[in-house]
Image (cartoon, rainbow, N blue to C red):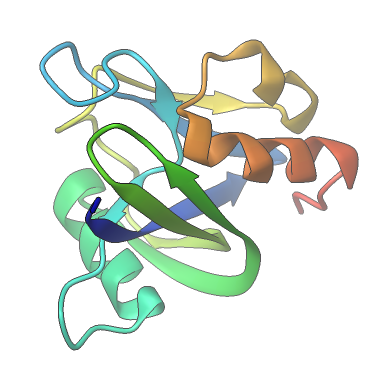
Length: 134
């Protein structure tokens, strides 16, 4: 039986663009794009996990808005349960620490990136609903 892995992703919006992060060569799903975030630890809410992960990985703080999507995707290494949330920068600028690259992307250009499968439903939703980015 595969392990359930509960993760969160931040759809950080600034000046009409969304922050996207590319996974490094030595990570699971190398070079795939994702919304920054990470695993939910025992005792954390998804929002608490997201704030912690963004502070650890990007060295900035965010304000979390509404949930965009919840996706369940079965990989060979486990079943990922991904919740994505609309976010705004509260303090600091995102810094490249754990990813190969970070990039601010227009919503209508999101689908041009090679996304991790669990992130694709959120990407489609953002593109289809013409997600408000102001």
